[in-house]
Length: 515
Image 1 (tube, helix red, strand yellow):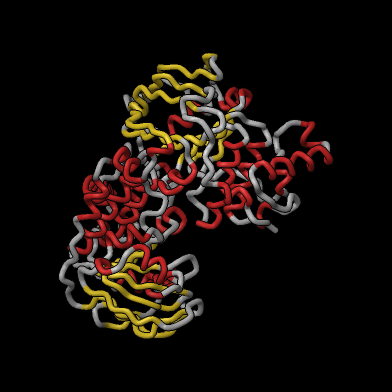
Image 2 (cartoon, rainbow, N blue to C red):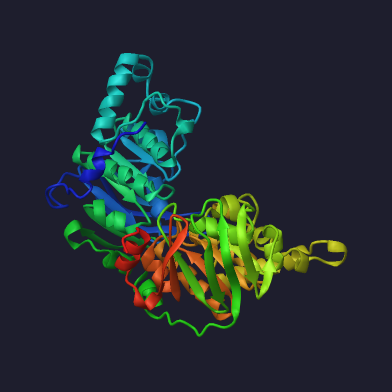
């Protein structure tokens, strides 16, 4: 259905000219935003967004990125300061005002209508001329696809598309309005690495056609790959801004959190492991190519390295009992484990899944109810009556100890940032004795500062005596936290290393079956 993404081949092409030589599409001058209650989300931010440039915007959760995007898009109004659109001061009071001026937004999960075709989604609400004239619409659609080097069947039903292709449909829909400024807010957060290439290629191609592009991403390698200019926000302030010739991940990380994550990574010292807490003997599920033998000891962190489809998540689910189609044996503290997840939890096995909101939390529930739901027995009075005071006390303790940033423990977890929501998932498990902790992509969708907090938390749990098995797709992170690493390829263990004896390059080669 989908042809190769032509734009991906051009992601390294930079626009010509220095950042200061191009005209200005939008000038943001000393913009502040203070919410009722006194929270200052932005503190005098000034930026210049120019046609033909990809302007990266990075910062930790809570740095002010989302607030700034909302102000540019007309969804929020600044408390003070000015927006000057093509030299004229503007006061956009609603998103329709910004859209009419030429601003378009693509969010991390931009809504599409799954029952409609690609073509119908792209022109939904775009105006009667483009919507009702079939010939004009087809020609315009072909032109839009060509402008970003993308090819897709216009009659395909959106429900049949991958998440990455749906995101490209959102980009095409924004382009159908012929914007002069495109805001891409975490557009790659929920798609596969292969699909990211298409989105990144589209961003570069947009800049080459003269559109001003703002690109927000937690993936700093993406920012270094496609951005002409990068601005760093921290605590609501602009702390650094620089051009492509000065652009490095090191500089971005330093701007975001100083040397905090680097210090965390460089101070990891493996503990002396204790007795075995988890033993896999010829464990195999129907989706795995070969049985796995693995021993994890108390206080030890074992990383699972592999590429997409390597069987890492499948192995964790087999251990936790979420996949009943398994062969072999799982031992916890020397005794065989059988049954499903409830039996695993009872025996001291905890699982933090990759999709935290769908599988690890209940989004509409408050923090305090999510924290307590894995340990209701110890939080109940006589006759199994829950004790709300005990539940709330535990949640308050968790927020204080784990550094969960929220207005209160009554905040629904769907309103939390990725890093704070992940801390709530951890909090479900750490107040009851567990021997084994299974972690599937615990830092996914979490900013650099949040990753540092989670890495330190994982180490602290190992220091308590837990045996930990962790899946991380970012091999730098995996080597920074794991004591040793096991490589999976197509469902089979192909190699194993001490983390201080293998490089990222060697691990990448092994995961790809090259060594």
